[in-house]
Image (tube, rainbow, N blue to C red; front, side, top):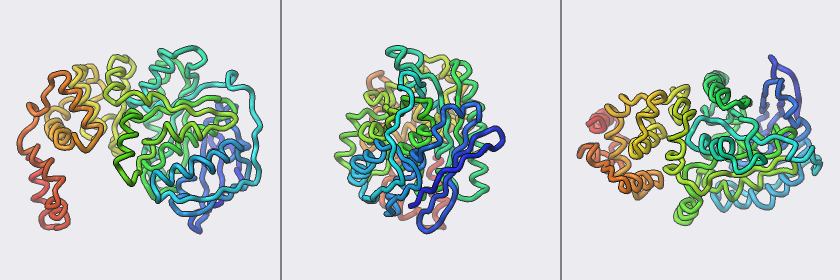
Length: 415
């Protein structure tokens, strides 16, 4: 992989930083854009964002990286000495590669205390938990968030064609307008960063989220000295035991506490937050956060991401937890509770019961339900339970491959 020199230009009231990227013999332009009113935050002299965001793409392709520009010295050596070897152990498909840069820089901007503290505002459980702990109830003023960010780096979808890229950008901008209302209520700016970096990956967002989000944040290392990366919904204790029992991993967030601090530079320090809290514990905290009750957005349905569809995996996981803890009606403004109760609930409860020993999230839901005397079995049906157990069978996998039997399988699913 070759990361070319950065070009800066103004487009429609925004600053765009772009660099040619050569990967697998093809050269395309990777860009980031940010509204011009936030240009004072940008560090336009370093290629750190492009390098960190794309390093896993190069590892999966087995290509060494040549950066035709300046890279922060700390990031360069931490990638070489720690992150690349750790990712290779995490999953051998991430191959060991070497890095070269035209120039390394250890130059510091003004002290971190004189710069801002950033975090993402996605509207999800993890994001609102981070905001509660580091903005509403920060341990001290020195740890209080000053800027919210909203990135288009894969969470809104991943695409390769111009048409799909446009669709994802439209979705990103629609969701930004929604989250901007939330930021206004909280009294902080929400800074959008648009990018096509997700188009350089042949794998999903789960496989690179822990790199592309810090990568986008590094654009702002001139004005932001610390960045909180909200952890996913599993405690580090659970992650450790899961890693010890699974051979091939793809969810890079599993090792955020190990890798994210090593993404820091001389000018920006990354800190993963709430690694000691489970998704259940986070949901319980957020359930009493009035702003979250009006603006929570957890939906993973890419066709309905401006609102909560109330029937995708993430919506159902959140709704089930809220019901167990007795707070579901408080979120009637952001979920369609009729869709949940009439269509999706019984099937999801059956799924949680059937897979509680295979998925940490489901295990946590079952434990929370048992602790509160909430019996999921009372709210599902025997056919639904049977279907969920059947889906894990070799017979189901075989039947799915027979086109003529697919309608029969779908009818069974609707029982």
